Image: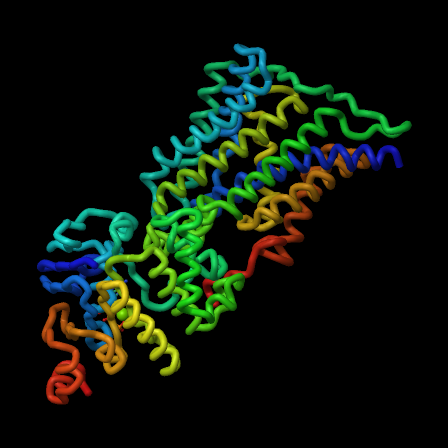
Length: 238
Length: 292
Ligand SMILES: Nc1ncnc2c1ncn2[C@@H]1O[C@H](COP(=O)(O)OP(=O)(O)OP(=O)(O)O)[C@@H](O)[C@H]1O
Ligand SMILES: [Mg+2]
């Protein structure tokens, strides 16, 4: 439902060399783009820079043409940009239900919030069964489901996902990616998906983007990238 | 037997005030991860505001509302002012600012109002009621217990059942994740400070009529005891503050009654040391779920 434009974005940590070096990327409305690359390529840094958690040294991030540079993270989120962070994004001291409500609070109130949460329970029945369980008692797969559901509660326009498959069984990964694909198709959600699980990511994406040394080194239709062994070998090392 | 009942019931009332003040320390610890060493000075400043309002209007109740408002305002000013500049990973600088604030506030109050104890009248009689031959709570102590219980229930409802409470808790537990969910974390920290100092101001306001009177240092001892209470209960635990507040209030009263007032701080110290030896994080501290 929204376009993300990244213009010559440079970002890094401390005084070190930049991790993202003048990176440019266009994510059109409703596209599902897989961001691939070796460990340390800068995928996480890219997603965190888009939400403002890592400050940009230069360059711009535009959401539907509006410059987000200088906006704090919470205001970017309130404009429709949601990030499911790498690893444990669940607030472990809160229950499943509280985590979900928290995700929707800035957008909905009262009955609207209840129905948005109910929508997620319908999408993830496993979460409904555990709605009153504390976050720290969830399994890794349940946590990942909760993190995704919690991002979707607010009906974002752009969803940034950082390695949703990390540490999960293939079946759970397939289920998560399936929900993601269906939701994107149904709502026109724009998705940027950072993944090590190349096959899985390319199976749900329209486009694959390969990062290396802080820049985009390949940008191809997903099908092409998945089917071409020479390309895969050159950029992804297998 | 009479004596025991009397000591228990007056210990309960003192414990309620202690618990309330300790709760205020827990609130600010949870929302900002600081032990506010200026809590007593800030609370007593708010009580001076209440004193002035009551003197001008003749109404205790307007003064009480004034103490809450002044406490909240002071909390917001301190958090938005001096503490914003030290926000960081260093707990020491926050502590130093708090100690500086104590000096400024207490010296300022002494200059403005003089160092003497100003008598502050309780809104209800302080003579114990008699049940048969046994002296029990005074009407004012009953009032203190009711107010403390009501405020604790209100805070529990606020934190546990409202959207604002959910955001306050989330911002305290996981600030970065909360920001990713659109929660304005800095505002939540400010609100935490406002709630905390308003609660502390109320506790100090309830305490002063039972002591020598209003003085810039009138809440200092309350802070020391409440700090022990918060540590015994677990700095993270509102339930711990309540339970430990009542325990220490009663302990204090029993030791004072059966031995001597001079031994009371010692008894608290022994309890504090014992608890810290057995459970360093406090009696009611939740296990740390973030390191697992
Ligand atoms: N907090 C940090 N401080 C300093 N350097 C960091 C920090 N986080 C990441 N880096 C460095 O930035 C580079 C890119 O890291 P990033 O986490 O973006 O990689 P990634 O593509 O997400 O890798 P992975 O697939 O392993 O998750 C790495 O060289 C890493 O060492
Ligand atoms: Mg990563």
